[in-house]
Image (cartoon, rainbow, N blue to C red; front, top):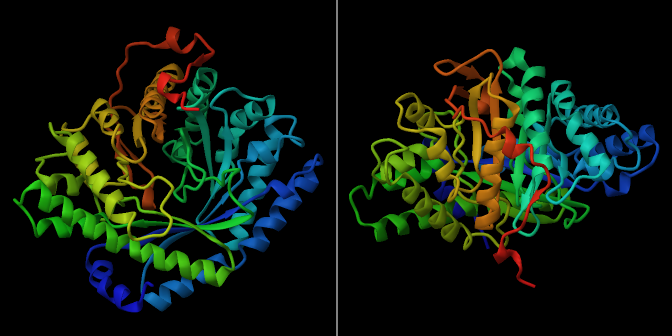
Length: 454
C-alpha cells in the first residue's frame, strides 16, 4: 500500500525540484453517443462529457489540497471522433460542428484540453476519416481547448503514404489559419505511428477502442528531481548512475500511483495507467536536456547524446514499472524543443539540429516534438519529415510522433512564442532539397518483415 509517509518523503521534490503530476486525464468513450442525425450526435456528445466529467476539476483540486501535490492539468480524452461521427458527418464542416461541441463541453467542465479529434488511418482512409482530417485546420482555428491527432502508420500495417501526404498539407494549412498566433494551431496537432490507446498526454491523447466506458490515466513528470539526484553522483560510473535514475523514477511514479488511485476512488471511475514520462516545462530546472548534460554532455546534441538519452529512457522505465500496478501511455523521456529551456539553448548555440533530434527519437518516448520551422517550408517537405519519423516507429516497434510548426512569416534566426506550458522556440533550419516525387507516389509502405508474428 502507498502511505502518506511516502508522500511526505517527496515534499522536497515538490517544493524545490519541480515535481508535479502533469495531468489527470479522464478517458470517456463516446461510442454510445453515435447517431446519424448530426444535431442529436452533438447533443449526445455534450451531455456525455459534461455528465461524466462534471467533478474532474474539483476532484483534482481536492487531491492537490489533501497531499500537497501540484496537478498541473486536468484533461479529457475521447474516442477518436472519426469513429463517432462517421454516420452523421457528410463533409469536413460537419466534423467542425463536433469540434465546436467538444470545445464547448471542455469549457463547461473547466478542463485544460480535450483530445481525441482523431483518425486512425495506418492502413487506409474511409471517406469519413478523410473528411475529419481535412477539417482539422478549421477545427483547430475555431476552438480553444481541442487537440487533434492522426495515426498514419504502425508496425503491423506499414505506413499510409496517402495519409502522410495529406497530413503534410493539413499541417501547412493549420499553420496558415493560425498565423496570427505564430501558427500555434500546429502545437495541438500530432501525427503518430503506433499510437497507444491510453496516452494521457496532449496533444496526442485519445481513448482507444480497446478501452472501457471511462478510465482515469495519470501522467507524472519530474525532470528536475532526476537532475538533482544525478548531481549527487557526479563522476560516478554507469552502474551508480543507472541505479540513481531507477530509484528516483520509482519515487516519482509512486506519487502518480497515489494520485491515480485517489482520483479513481473519488470519481468512481476505474484506474487505467500511470504514464511515467519525464515531461519538461519552460521552467528553469525542469529540463530533460539538463539531465543529459548532467550525465556528461557539454551540450545536448554533442556526440553521445543518443546513448545518454537511451540510458535515461530505459532506467526511467525500469524504475517506474515497479512503482505502479499498471504503467502505459508513452512512458519515457520527452524531448520537445519549445517546452525545454535546455533544448532551446542547445539549438541557439548550434549544438542541436533537426537531424540530431531525429536520431534521438529512435530511443526517446515520442518523436519530433514542438519544433518550429520556417513558414516557407513546403507541404511535401513536412510530409517527408513525417514519413521519416513514421519509419523509425514502424521499424523499431515503438511509438513515434511529429508535432512540427511551420511558423508563417518567420524564418531561421527568429523565434515563435506559444506561451504557457508550450513556451517558445527558435526557428530551426530544414533541409531544402525536395522529396516531392517520393511523397507523390501514393499508396502504402508495407509493414516490415518482423511484423509477421502470428
